[in-house]
Length: 322
Image (cartoon, rainbow, N blue to C red; front, side, top):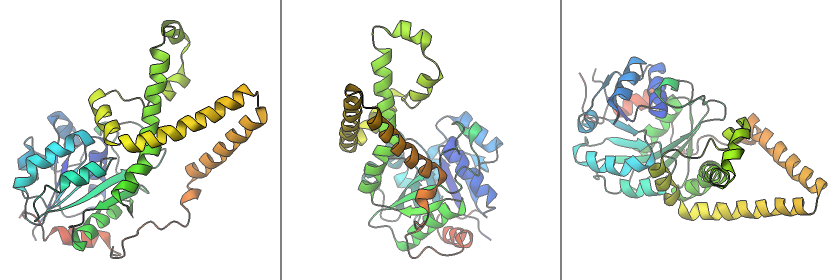
């Protein structure tokens, strides 16, 4: 029986976790890993996330039935441009970036013979203990909301395949428009990083920082933990969602101003009410109660047996491994 090839480009925390989850599902496919840092791909292979590694990107993707780009937004455009002329007819490409609109635009440059389905696995709170391949785990994606954004030309069979892939690794497929996805994620994922940057800048670039640093403890460390360390990646991400982040920043400024007014008025009751409302809603979110009754899968053609259909669909795509 021929064996399809799955290539994971980017074998860090997300890519490694996907590979481990596919291995746990015992799918009949060859999993190839590639990373721009070859030692990371080697560690992914040692951890059992991939069957073999290839240092050359083209070699890794050539003949693959499914290619998963598990990398930051900044690297996707260049990667798609590099591999587009070497893809097998019928190949499916998906990604894991947290911004979808620019990715879907870049995917329009791919040949008509391949399909692109945008993806973003949103991992549940508490399942992430650290980044990197060392912290990758087959169960990280259990219960994750796996956002899927279909290109207009993607056939239903390709969409089904990626939805079944998401189900197979333990996630819940959630079909969403790229603009809606980016608008929501700007508030719940990228705004926190922007605000952490502003907080760190406001305190650390203040002339009193040297004295303040002596008293800064775990609270300040935790509050600034989301401030990006990679300036190029941060710039790419923030500017890719410039319009959405401006809107969310305006909302935040409005709420911050409301809190400032409560402080000015010495309004204990107002502060208590705001804190109580937030604490109640946050507890519901962390407990998963906000998700109760919500449909996990919205694509009517996703089938019952994701493993059988996923591997079966891949068998008809890419170059077969005997």
